[in-house]
Figure (tube, rainbow over the protein chains, first blue to last red):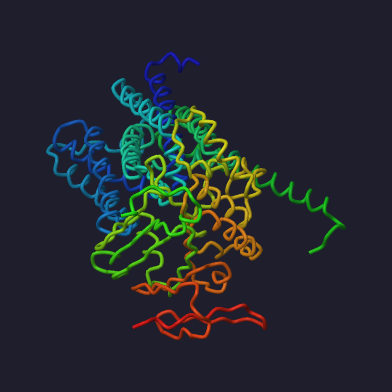
Length: 283
Length: 266
């Protein structure tokens, strides 16, 4: 409990909450629409922005935000206009972004900066400035989803059909991709570039065990994400391991345990059903 | 020109209304033109079966019709009758396999998406929209499923729900893309009846590679293979369609009802 008196720990808790809200909501859209790979591409491409930030001497995270937003736009435009296969394109951007990052970091004069925090997360080092950025993105995400919930649901379910019904599919897709880029950048502080996808997929997978409703999956994902972040935060503090690793470890353990329970319950229910139907039909 | 005038009220006169009219339409991609010189008119209460080989442009024609792609050349005009509340209302039943069956969405929300009822997460629908959705669910006998997730339904139930989505906005034209492929056969029988009932009120365009299932109910047939050949309902059965462009076989045991179309005119 003494931990709660440290300002850095409170900041870390705040970051965990804000990032969980954003990732829980947007991750549900990402998982439902099956664009996890796009989110992965954008997050790794963000590394290019971080490298560029170091090279130019400006904030790496601001640079990363611009870089990943550009990548998101490139994915959206090139797949629609240049008729490129989306997974190929993402494969290219994914690795190119990382390469650009490494090139810039090594071109930067002076000693090479410590990149561990960006790659694997460092939730214990979150600043007030980071917290404010996270808060803005969280509020923006909540705002967009409250306002456009139905449109987002229809678009994610069946884009072509939504187009035939006159929904501004491209605009909404762009808004959501923009939010995804920002979310990825604010999550870098918490779980790191390499592990960002986890916050956008594991809580949703856990939530999907208990609900088939888009809205409920969003709310439960926020809860599971926050739980995993807090557990990971404590592990990170005591074991002195980058928070990204401990958070993903916690998220996955929670998912694994609940999934096992779910499987066992399902098997039990099935055998109960079979016993009930015994003698009525064989086949 | 009667084209842009709103529909005259009488039921008899509406038979001649041209709902959609394509003139010398070409479509496809810049590097690959799939359809050329398509002249195609859909009248009110038409029931047109679109057949043709895979890759022949059936889907492209449908996408042009639905406004999903712009024609590269030619014109496509929609009658005022197609519009309602300033929106183009064409009911659309996509191919069964393109739908993500694991998506977490409830049946009634699927049908609501047919109205594109907007509104945020907290906003309730207008009672008018709700009435439409529940009425159409009842009409297709799937009211009891409305709170289920789409993936929990059987194939036939799902197609009924997607028909509800297509029809909830009361369109004057319904477009179906291979509605009975990959769905249980009992649904095919029901579908024929459903479509014949619907056709008393609205025009239907049915895309299918399975001519046998189409023939029972359609009035006219359009063969699409790069170009379009139209076979009207009153064509006699004495002509054998042996053109390579859209040949087909009827395989069956004994009393298979069959229709034989004229050769494509040269």
